[in-house]
Length: 272
View 1 (cartoon, rainbow, N blue to C red):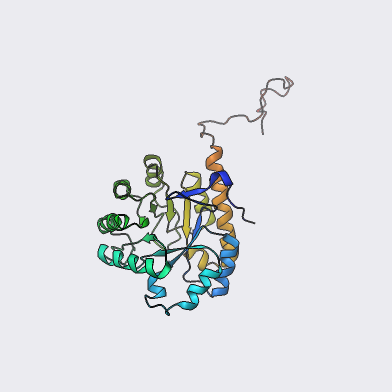
View 2: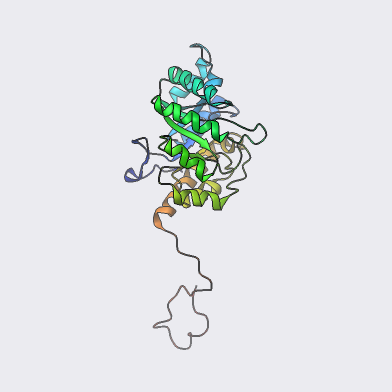
């Protein structure tokens, strides 16, 4: 059973508050009914959708658009499949008209094999879209300098990957992600590469502000159950981050104090 975030611990993006720290993709589900069931279990802050799936014409993708509206979640259009800054800018502007929202998940792919972002084109596109009034959530790598450039461009949040899209490997560069979290103060949501709820819990324990999932849920044997598991993991990781974990110790430490313990028990390694 998933639980909503505490009212005083809401995710804040571009000044707006969200009760969930989980964003969910909408592609590759076995059926619309299973997508609906997954969304009902996860209760995500936003659902991502691609203009390329919807089409730019008013009647194209009408059924899917109506399905998204029925689920009652904010829709976050994306520029999936774009390979240049200009292509992404044009797609974002069309998405703003189709979905009637200034929010955009910005993707500019630079390598077909890894689907790694073209970071130079990404920063150029982010500059242009922020100036055009968009609320940009850029999909990027864990590169500290690129993320700083995106923030300098006016992005109030960034979305670094944990691993290449759809791999499910989990965080392949923990040092890079943790360093990024330490150095930048803007909200950061891990996007791409998570395969297990434990992956989501881990990055949330490191202080990331949320996660975006698609393949890990859509391709699960039971997508709805997996969506609920991820929602619970995100909450658990966030709670652990707020609680503050103990520092690892070099040697064993007895968890039960020996003061007041009968002498015949002392020196026998008392503790649990």
